[in-house]
Image (cartoon, helix red, strand yellow):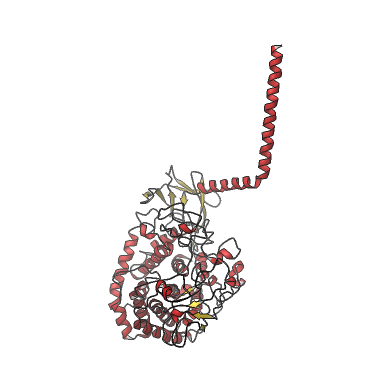
Length: 607
């Protein structure tokens, strides 16, 4: 009896437990059915994260390496247990390579291991394997051709006041926005004949950055830098087709693109006195909408000495390079007169610095868009006097240039343009100006090169904390790269260009975060740049060919975003989200630095 009783009791308990299990199973099925999409999404996310984690280690230029140049790749913060193994496209083992050196980051303490694959000179696609991770590496002779064209073509995509045609822009075509045929004179800009509230026409030009305004100082710098590079390799640009509306004429596409903005700049000069308005702007930034949906009034605001000198410099430079041009037969004469008149105004108004704070305390409407403030015009005057002398040979301009010659070489950026004047003097071989400037150039370039051997990523860029900040990838990576190319041409051939190429390698993937920092290129590139056009066009992928600002430990936008930076380390303080204007914005001057560097490297090493 006891045995039977125990069996029945066990059965009852087992049956109840089984029923509980069945009920729990049904509940789980219901939960799964109701949340299936989220579960699948979570699983996919985990897979992607796992794959990304596996791909975290090896860093390399994601576009490829030139056949006969160095090919250094980096293993990031992973202790190597052996060699990296290289396979060709057919899966055949080509070679195995051990790390040649290791370098520790001065900020994070992470150790990076450098592998030299320069023995791979045969063009083709290779697979690099290490500890279960595989990355692809291309070797060829035109690895930078496509991205070079895209970096220049980005300026066409930024054109204002015209429709962007599908024939040239594909799916990024858009309707006309901001015709700027009715632009108001701001009270700060009024003059005799142009009272406040009167209307002028100021069409064309490029949108400056992530916003829709147009700024003289930045436009002038953009053109000045690209025209400087054009002068060094004109044969390259004569053959480079960027597929823009002007591509069928007799002028190189790069000059056509510069002319599109130069035409706008001419409208920004007050014909009565020669002064140049600082910018054409709305009172406040537009929302993240397409240009056709923008409805704020647009104004030209106060004339400034820096904008006027910059205008004079670039007009003189363009007038010289486009003299007797068949496609723009009247431009050179017009630009020469405009440059001379602007220079006279700037000399007569040395304290006319643009201050938005002061302007807003005196006039309405108040203006809150980009300031481009600069309270020193010596560098602008040096550049303007240099270009006007080279154009006209008038002795007074050379006297002025000599008075303002810089004491040390400066990296060319919009707020410090002395290097643009210095670069122009290098081609003249004028002993009085050339000798001190060539010494400055050598000192500057040698300092950059000396940093490479102790570099985590084998590049002149990225080794000191000051390399990182607002627009760091343009102003401290690309622009110094251009200067190294000048040093290679004017000081010693084959001594500096290879280090400019290493800066490009850093930019295009061989860096701590493994980004190719140019939209639309590489295996991992920014998807959400701070740019209204890319945010509002309804296309998931951003406009291609745009260089983002890059790592910026200042994180000036951190209180304006829900997304937060994952790191405060100088070289990892980057966030690929639309709201990150401090690390993920784009700008025409940054793209000018990118295009200048990549096009010149392509001209040297591409075939």
